[in-house]
Each structure stands twice: as C-alpha cells, then as structure tokens.
Length: 167
Length: 364
Image (tube, rainbow over all chains, first blue to last red; front, side, top):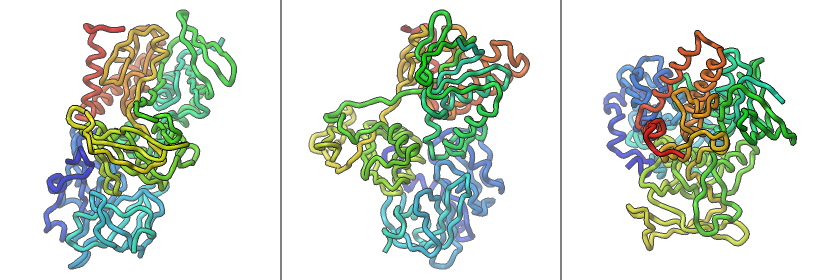
C-alpha cells in the first residue's frame, strides 16, 4: 500500500501508464501522482495542452497521452518529483527513462549508474546519455538513462553517490 | 515608546506576508523577529513548494523566503527588527520586547501575532542523549550553518517534516537508516515518501522507538512494531546502529502571547493544540489582535502566507486603509485558503477550524 510504504502499487502505476503502443511511439510523460493534494504547477508547465487545467487545485493531474510529446517541462517543474518521461522508441531492445534528480554528485553523460525501482531495489547498471540542468532557479536535473525495454516502467531512481556505487 | 500602526510579532512566512499586505494598503508596519534574520522556517526549506502560482508553487522555500524578505525591504512602510523577542502584550495595548539586549516598549494600533509553532518531543528511555535532535534543529544545522549532524540517522515521524528533512539529509550525503511512524499510514505527502523510498530508504509505519542507547552520545536505537491499538508487539524489536535520532513528531502552536493577551483560547486537536478563537478575518476575541500562520493552527507554509496576507489586509482595513481595495483582497485571500484546504489533505484543518468557530463549545 502506497500510504504505508511510499511504494506505488502495480495497480496505482497502471492507472497512469500509457498503452504499450503509445510507449513505442516516442517519449511520453508518466505522472506518478496518486494523492489529491493542493498542487497544480504541472498544468501550467505543459505548453502542449496535454495536462488539462484542474477544476479544483486538489484534483489529480490528467494527462492526454496522445497530445503529450514528452518534452519534459512538467518533469522538472513538478514539486513532488513525481513525473518521469519514458521513450520506448529509442531502439528495439532499449528505452530511455528520464528521471528528476536532486542529489550530488550529478552523474555525467557516459556514466554507468545503478538503476533502482520504486522500492529502491537494484535493477541493473545503465548508461546516462544526457543530463539536463533545470537552471539556476529550478535546480532539478533530468537524467536520461538507457534501460532494457522491459524495465522502462520500473526504473525510477539511481543509487545515490554516483560512480562509487556502480560497477 | 515606539508608536506604530501595525505591529507584527514573528517574521516568518505569515508575518512577512502580513507586513507587505498591510504596507501595500498604506499602513506603517513594524515586524519583530527574534532570530538574527527574518524568513522563519522558509530559509531552511530547500524543496519546491506545492500549491498554485499564487502561493509561489514550484519555487523552493528559501527562494520564497528571499522574495518575502525583499518585498518587506523595498517597502518604505515596513521596518523589521531582528534579534527582537516580544515579551508581553499588556492591557493598555503596550507591547514589550527585548531588542538587541535592550528592553523596549511599543504602542501599536493593531497587533498581528504570527509566532509560528514549536516542535513536540516524545518520551523514550535516553531521549536526552546527545545526537537526538528535533527536525528543525537538524535543518538549521545543515541548511543555515552547513553542518551535517551525523552519519546515519533514524527519523521518527513520516509527516511532511520528517519526510522532507530525511530527503535533505540524503541530499547532504547522510544515510537514513529508516523513517518510522507510529500511525498506520504516512502522514506527509505521498510524493515526498515515494521519492525517498525509491532511493532505498525504508518507511516503517506502525513502528515506534523503544529506546535510544549510547555511552557519550547516541550509538543506536531499538525500534519495534505496533499493533492496531498502538501497543508494542513483543519480538519485533530491531536494533539500528545510528548516531543521530531525529524527531519530527509534530508541532504545537506558539500561543503564549495570545494566552497572555487574554485572547479566548480553545483546544482543537485538529489544529494541534490550544489556539485563539478568531473570526473569519483572523481577529481574535481581543479587538485589534489578529493571528496568522501556525499559531492559529498548524498547517502548511502556503496557507500561512495566505493567512498572513489576510490578517495584514484586515488590520490595515480596520485602520481605514484600502477602503475600496481591501474587501476584494480579503475575499481573494479567503477563496485561496478555501481552495488550499478543500481537498482531502486539508480535511483535518477544515474540521479544526469548524470546531474553533463553533461558539457552543467549552473554551478556556
């Protein structure tokens, strides 16, 4: 149970997951926000009109997967660090998962890092192919990780401390 | 004797918001802040805030703090006295304070008490060992003074403060052995919990600390599981080697000045303790004395800022400022508060405020 452990259940995740077909088409946001709290920056971040304006600020975000182009602006704007971008079109066998990151050291392109699932369990060692800074004010980095296709909906974090923890 | 139109006691998110709101309508404002810098708890908050644009959502707490401080600094109508502790509010309306080692008297026309809240403590053997901190102290050490409190921490409390301070400790390179929570569910925002959990930190609900141990300072803690009646379950003890135990077990409104000023008070568990009875515009039963922020019921910083604004507008309005603008600004602030509190996360506060405003119940 999410509210006992902090780990979203498979059922929770399913509710916010696009179809396998949509994942194959290209980058798309996964908004892992499961609790109604007063928060709406994601709706204002989305310039595509994919995240619909909220009637009540306590509503859960609603994302139209067909309009979302995976630009990732919402990812760096979400105060809860609850948005990820998954690109299943990266290659036949691999997908790219973009995760928000606010720890030091910030990994560099080419680094191999240990990927973790929502429970913090290790899933393997993956390469960083891009690191985006959120800028001076925002300060949240976006890490682009290349992962096997079947782990695209599981990798959500990396082992802290960077290189010294990877192989 | 210093004379001022609006005196604000406390320079945190509520107090600073009150100051610029009152000053914007034309009132002269003095803010008393007991710390050496204004900003209150905001200066230590490194995470992005929730809420909407109107409450600076998406900005980090310290950035919002800087913004509020800047607003007060650039206003010719606002004076901020730091290192100044309010001592008493007297029958004749005089407020006394200790300011930079001197005893000063202030004669305000209106008072806004925005003193915030203080941390609660819990009882367990050896809870006085060095290495046991309140979460606020850990934040001050780390985020104000740049000092990490230790290497490995047991966090007690999975409310927003426990979750956020755990995250900040992790960002500072400190290991969190576990976050334990006596309640059966996580009290803080689940997005905070999830981001910590996926970094590998266990969050153990229905768990409590049974003792701390160590010779000179904390060397470890014993925790155990609780049953549905909150009773320890024999045989579930775990020994955690930690050098810091951090307590984030709730806050109590800092209401001494309200008691002393003879505001009618009421005990409302949903608002975390004794709070002054006040009207919709945050005026207490002592005419001309307003409250805003955690002192009127423990809540989030975003609502504290809106309450501050509401109290500031109301105080200035009662002095004859903003006769045209004020009513509309008041309504806007009330609508924002209602919006922030209308969801499940604000249910407890709403219930508390309803109890508080209900005139039928026993008060003290």
